Length: 108
Length: 121
Image (cartoon, rainbow over all chains, first blue to last red):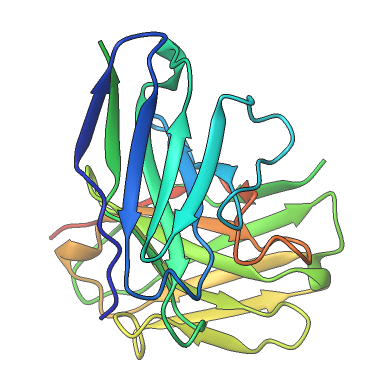
């Protein structure tokens, strides 16, 4: 079955830039999405269709796509950004959705 | 505002079935798909499937095909997920999520609060 691969963890100091990658063979032809999830809460959409940010999401969150990798970038990381981040996309047929394994962002 | 309110926690024995509800408000229920996603304790999000609430057409993840049934009641603005043949590995929080409007692709901008299902003898 199709898989999306994320690093298990990323650590940054406050004010630095965090980059979280997500790799998958179908990503050149399928959009990537990013969710933030804090303990005990439902996920929150932070990036859709590779690069777009929903209203209410801070401008420090941005997304990009290149080949088989999509990337979530958080500029000027704040303590409140500490959370698990999941990428989401579809398989090559576009009919089945899949999530990455998640990346725990730690703000040092 | 858009809200998805799910039914309460469930405790089931192995082999049993569970049915979780997701009541929608704040929008036209039949205008958007409802997806179901589960998350075992400490594990990744896992897509279960979706239902077109207008036509009742469904699509299931291969992993759950044959064990899960998604339905919807447009008169009650409520979607349901039934999972049968429960085993301990099905212990998880089950979330419903609303599909996005045109141009947002497969994004899930709205989520229910989650329903914890525990399978234990």
